[in-house]
Length: 329
Length: 208
Ligand SMILES: [Fe+2]
Ligand SMILES: [Fe+2]
Ligand SMILES: [Fe+2]
Image (cartoon, rainbow over all chains, first blue to last red; front, side, top):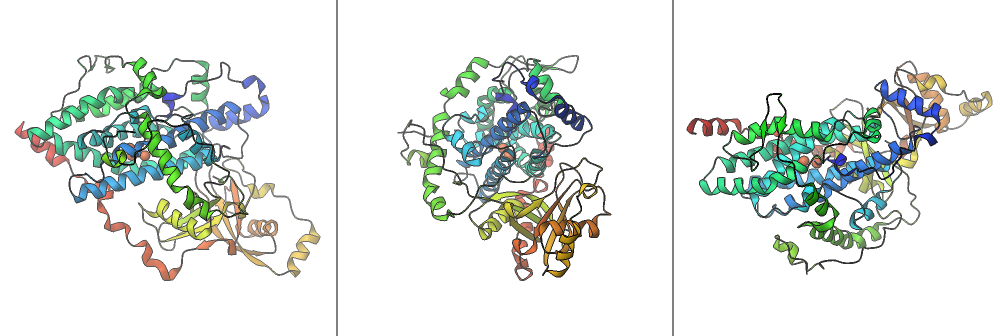
């Protein structure tokens, strides 16, 4: 789901480092992208390109794996056999997305071992929305529908990016997401058009999740040199604001048509067709993403426990003569 | 102890916080294999992506789970990544065969005399797309196989990149096991089309 990778990419270097790159190779690289050709793993690429893509694809992978937890927790308690099967299939898809994305990131040179270590060490980030809990089945439905919807906006854009392995992974992921979106919508509609208690439960879940949803695409991009270069290189395909606007355009009408309301009195589309809304609390966002959210500790602890519990199996299957080779494509 | 809204997680009695575990050892996640699938009977095998696995049989199972779980599939091949001989990548519209250096005559002559093996050849037609199986050649080495591939398939264009794989290195699904691919259509709840929600929305609006 959650290709919200742009969200947490605050550039750590002040400079782009481009002055250290070979100008001829750089010109060829940029010309290839400008022609609409994809970059493949063995091609020359600038350090900044490699670094940003690695971080972005890795965070995307972590978000899939951590994102499967709040929905996974509802599999045993899903109402009815059909929903249980579907919820299980969706969660399995998300974990599969993580597998595809880790492989894509590996082609850039970071090993899967290092990425998984950085996740459980807390060095790497994942989509901040998963640091919030799913206290009811309706909360899980909000994720299935609206968080996936937001992720699809991102992923469809990124699938047109310049890096071949990421595009191949995203094509497959996007095809699977079609089911997630419909499944989530169906579940939300079922509750929102159901009994008064079901409706209340769904409205409350939406109220809980809306502030997080509004932060999903990240703060407004400051139009820095970084942003400009990353957009020229087709690493970043749309600004955070453009993604947020597209999401609101597509989904606010669908939310309202089933009798739900949104907990933001300032949310409206102005005469220019632009959505206005209350600015999300970015201080709170920062606090949570830096570790102080309601579920950060649980998410990492569960992930660590899974790693520890599986360690003996991996050890038992280890081939002593095996060599690490990066995936090819 | 960590308290979770999910009682199953609370029961794990995980610590609220703990020192970060040490970094994973190299190959904790196993070596890599590359996977090809056949989407329909009598169509070419196409590259679908890598998996990590301790050995080929397990790679096959992981590949089946990862790449044939949701969509039609009638066959699968896996190969250790290290067993693939990769050419350089050309530009879109070009053929990398044009840039292939010819093997010295004595090497080719030796080729004729020596015992040959089958090699499978895969072409990438466009950057960002997937390598597709174009056929087999007989040769004494991957380099010689590439020359043979140029003779056999070099008229196909464009060819951005070629993969050469010794045929015995590919683990292939067995014709006799074909029924392993037939379960997908049973699970309609995984298809977007199984969710027809508009009727319910319309009814809700009418009653509104
Ligand atoms: Fe996903
Ligand atoms: Fe999702
Ligand atoms: Fe999803």
